[in-house]
Amino acid sequence: MRIDRSMRSVALLVLVSCLISSCRLRDERATESPAASRSGLPGDRLERILADRFDPQRRSRALGRLLAETDPADAVELQIRLTAASPYAHPSDLEQFAWWWAGHDPVAAMQSPVATSTVSIDFWQTQVLRAWAARDPAAASEGWKAGLCQGAQDYCLLALVAGWSDSGDGSVWNFVRDLGPGVLQQRALDVLAARLVADRGIEEALRFAEATDADAPHRFKLQLFRRMVTAIALRDVERAASWAERQSGGPFGDGLLRRVAVRWVTQEGSAGMTWLMSLPTGPQRDDAVQAAAYRWFQSDRAAALGWFEAAEDHPALEPAWPTFAQVLVEEDPARALAVVGRIDDPDQRDRTLVTVLRRWRERSPESAEDWLARQALPESIVARVRAESPQPGSRSPRDR
Image (cartoon, rainbow, N blue to C red):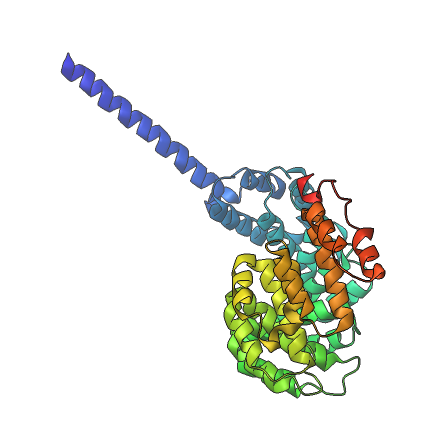
């Protein structure tokens, strides 16, 4: 009797195992087998592929086979099915489909966007435009100029520039130069500079930047230098610092120290500030010190505050004293006011004093008002402090 029960248990386990294996085999065949994947209409096959929600790699392989075997004339049918299946569609599905369709009829792909509950039309059109530009940058740029990309123009432009760069056609630099000054050109240069550094290395990227025509219109070379030093700082901040030092006194050096400094302090605050303190005095360094201090207090307030409390008397840090005082007032108003008193520039000192007192009154209206009553400050300063500060006894915005 016990043997019979044991045999039945073993048989049952074997049966269940076989059923599970059979289900898995059918699942693999349905989603991965080339023979099975060729059966049925493209739209039906797409729906079966999209129903496989648990293995992204298998799903991607199956979609790749489907697209390789599909007549481009069926692209609209796939677009309709993909849109209808939006609850199951992943961004990677749309990206793969966009690149395939753009390789056959990019204009139709741009004009027939796929949008789902999780992916916007902007995403679709930028994928198509980038794939188009990688294959035919001249035609893609004409399509962009004609307004085929209806999404946010900065996203469209960056997709065009990225695809153009992927194509290996160096005329993309002329295209970006001819965009003229403005945010779009600057963002496009961010893309190109980062790619140049990644593809060719730091030294070749620097040689390219330095060889750029100094007479290019609208300070194009200056904008390129700024974007290049940023791209390098993200990879080798010390190399970026040495190049920025060498260029800072030249015609295309404005803002380079600042760009290096704000990235260095987010990586290692004390090292970045120590580097700035070692530089010769001048407006470029002062601007970098102020920007770096602000960024460091934003990214790591405790570390920055501790470092500045130990090094605040260094004369190179004077451009950062307004920021330091505005942070310090939350910990020690008396010390913050002492820092304000060391600022040489009268206008800067008055602006910082007003800001510090306003912040003090937001946190502790009674004590700040008591201090004001005992000072002989100009009425104009007191009026500015009180103009946008809560009245004594009211709650601070932080407490609401």
